[in-house]
Image (cartoon, rainbow, N blue to C red; front, side, top):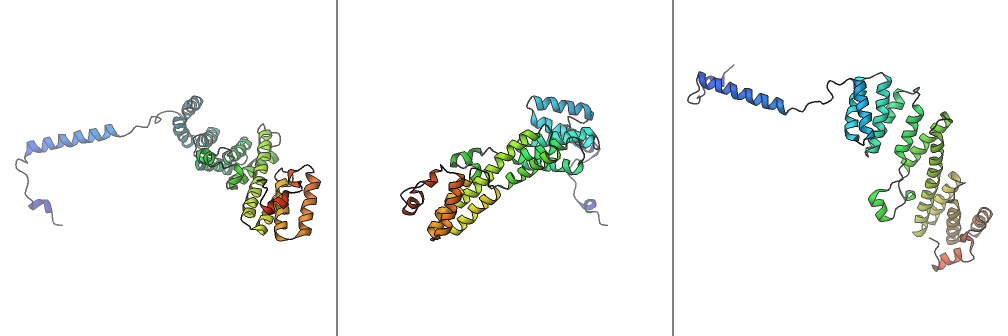
Length: 279
């Protein structure tokens, strides 16, 4: 193998003294590099003490530091109840810090790995809470958007988690709140269907409006949104000239909501003339 350095010109003064100076310089650089390497502040801390520190940080609002500590605990105490607790705390903190995807991943991992855990009811509750989001954020508030106008898959996932909780653990301390949230979700989902139905009606897609209104009636029969769903069906059938179906929708509306403003004599007629809008 040819040694390219054997025939290359060397710098003047590259003698024994220069080699020593070069070695010292290299050593200095190595020391500098080592000193700049970030140290693991949790390196020599036992898992139990690390968890206690994480809980203290959580109580003081130091979520970022607590997350780092809990991630170490989960690894070091693998296979123990302490690791399980760290997983649940991590899921909660990810949610608190706005990392919804990480929160869901953490809680789903816990449910999969520990299906017989005594904390499974809390894990299900936490999964529901992570998906249950009634905070629209800045853009939602500025646009006047409400929950019914958003994509509802997360709400359906949340409902499923809460439903599983109350079915498997009816006496859990989380069950009562889960039931309240389920009622809220059902109303939001019903309102969503009516919102879509109203959207179609306003654009003249009357058959599509009827279909979405019927979906609200079928899936969410006991919710307040069904009142408007029936009216949209009345108005849509009226637009399509289907008088018997319109009359049937009005009969159901009158039977279930006898004092509804949608039963005013000019409600549908006014909608036809464009002189009155109830929404």
